[in-house]
Length: 143
Image 1 (cartoon, rainbow, N blue to C red):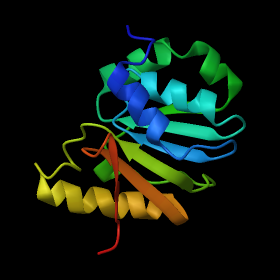
Image 2: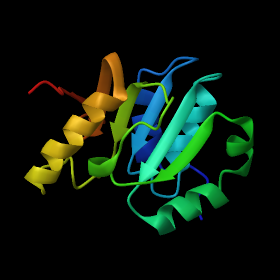
Image 3: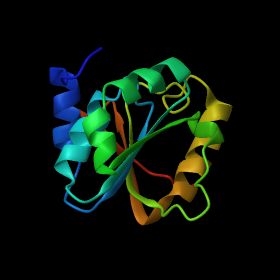
Image 4: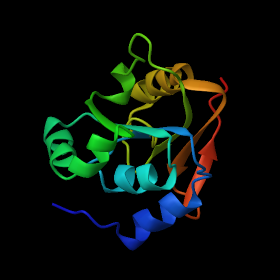
């Protein structure tokens, strides 16, 4: 299973406005390579990486032993259109998504629901980034 970032994912992680202490939500994490890279870049922050695929989450967990042990990275099996903060879970400063069907326009109704869920999961002033820019674009969550 992949542990290293592809050039494309490395560019995406590099483009995120990361700094120590941030709380980051990755939507559609796949095997977790970007989540691990983000966790290393935000120091004492926290990354929650989600995916609708149970297989992807199992792969991500299997490849992230050290990062999970640090307490700065978690994975959750959930589709973004079903995502809710858990009781006591603090909102996130940044969310990012790469190749997520519910957010790329292929599924408009799922996209509307997903954006509502993301808006609720982000702190005031929180920002959403998606692929499709150079290499990312910021997406407004305003209605």
